[in-house]
Image 1 (tube, rainbow, N blue to C red):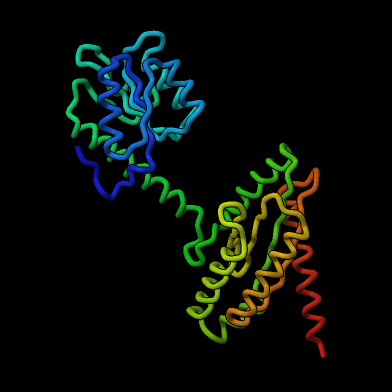
Image 2 (cartoon, one colour; image 1 turned 180 degrees about the vertical axis):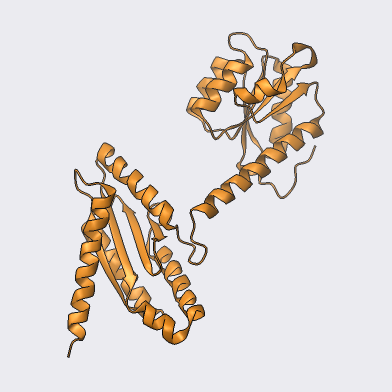
Length: 292
């Protein structure tokens, strides 16, 4: 039994659920030898306890077990842990239908005694399909030019973070900025040069924020946003300054920006409006400064 080397099995964790001690132990050994992290449970209730304590990417479960059958375990698991992939196992004589098992929430179905290559193929297919779904999901919320998140995800994420701030009372800040005179730059240097500028902005934003905590967005042609988690206005202003200086040093780009901090009672739209107001105040001041 060998898994496609293109699949990263080291990040997979499998919970084997079966009341047959020998089969359970055998499956654990085989999966562990392939670098899957494994654990096992002898019943549905025991499996649910383990799922509550530890994260698994796969569950391989028998259908006919005492205390709780496979149908009930699959339904409870898929409802509580929708990201876990489930393969149901059953004997030839048990009469479970493929469609019923899939409708219960399983990803696939395999009959015992099964060929180990068949199990390998099912696991590989599920991992491949999951990876494809994740990549499609990532692409759907990513701006292809800059690599930042797109406008759709900006509004969705900001609304989620505002709701979380209301519930958990954590700090939340927002930076909005755009490039000064970008249209003139495009008209003078051409759109290919303009695209390279936008790519530079995307790279520099990601360098200036905390990876995995804060997030950068292109929500318009030359308009950008940064959502800062657990940050106050002073932090937002410091990161905004860092972004402005980085853009100035890398291509001589000038930007106008506005920072705002969430306060009780604000909606996502209110937070955007507050940052937008400060952005246009800076832009207006810059125009006044250029008047001879």
